[in-house]
Image (cartoon, rainbow, N blue to C red; front, side, top):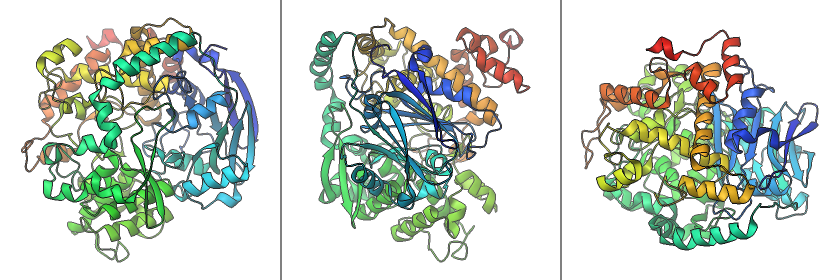
Length: 640
């Protein structure tokens, strides 16, 4: 097997308790991680497969740099059919699981079927075992890992688990890696729950080999000394994680405020819930495998343990819900992690419920007596419990934001901020143009972790922009010019990050000096012995984007119309602060979207790849699948 890879991909049928093995080498044109996952998922699923059917396939992928000395190479890529959108489900998480999975002999685990009763999978040194999980059903994600480690008498076992949220098929249930790292977005936890799969546990002693180990060691040392140790991001992250950097500007940066109805939150509120307010609850520091930044913390609140707080957590459970009590916020975050619930979607659906309550669309009759007000953390904490348990009004919210608006009706959809049927919980979409475009074109159905470029928040000057991007104005937040090409650039780049198994935080996304494409290519070639240029890797990244977009077309019918901004972002401007009055201009956004499709070499009318574009990337299977479904990708010559 090629250097850097474990060598095997396991196809696991839970219904028949059968395992088939193939060589990962068959799929190396997709490199690894998210790339190989996408190829396998596309081949496995028919368009009419329901996300909670046994036939839905969920794939765990560990990229070629994972488990090596490459800094932060720890990420697990997970692909499946999205429970919320019906399109692509795609997420990834850190911790130690992905590295341990490779040490156990596998690059990818392809899981399908439904077990007759609750099980967990134990993967160890080239073998996969089916273990009874009846005693684990109903347990938290944290307790599940503890139970498995004790049952198998090995504290070094790493786990990927669901909590009661996944068991109860909450549509936005997530997977939790190593107790505190979330595989959010798309309902992967509900997919596990529908399969009676409580967890996957991994332990390996097989190791990995690099093609050029001595040269790799020297390159890693150089990268640490010349790049990481000189990085401003590294200094901030080591000191306080993403939250310290996020809250540094306080009210001078946009926030998600009260169900995304605004982006301004005043300093007087922010100062009540700054990072130092959480320090009394901090119990330990943690780091993912191979991470030199160690920016994560373990907290304990009311006997609930959790990992956090990151910027997203703060945005979800502070500004978006109006909560300024750090203990109350931490409690809701802990409940989300322990129950295996995606915090972003939980925040979005609860914030929508609060706004419906405040606008008289619902009352305490519908909310089972809960007074849903901004900042009423006690009521919101109880509401989170009911969402997990599928009881009362929580049962409505457990269906996800888009479906909840259909169930409730009464014009409540006007208060829901969604993209591709998925809930949005984002800051800066009114004020930062490329950020908004990247969120809305995301192949995973909305969200900033695909191509939304954080460079817009970095305040670089025009000279730096020109030298780095070859464009005069990418970091000018309010400008629509040059933003489409910037988003395309970061979408390709993020695909490379994901197929390698690297962390997106300490990369060009947060600091333009970190993990530039040629550096990633250097690490990859030293590990694998292959000779791929940065441009070749970015081309694979583009191929992934095209395949994912065709997957969304086939399974959900998504196209250009689904990439347009939610109405409230067009009509409700930022109320105060340095971004006062900002909102998205539909005409200028549409022009920017035209440019985006032009840079992609896709059809501007449908938002789909041209057939010729797909074939140029070797995606014959994808083109055939579209035609077998009775559709046609547009042709370039017809678009002229």
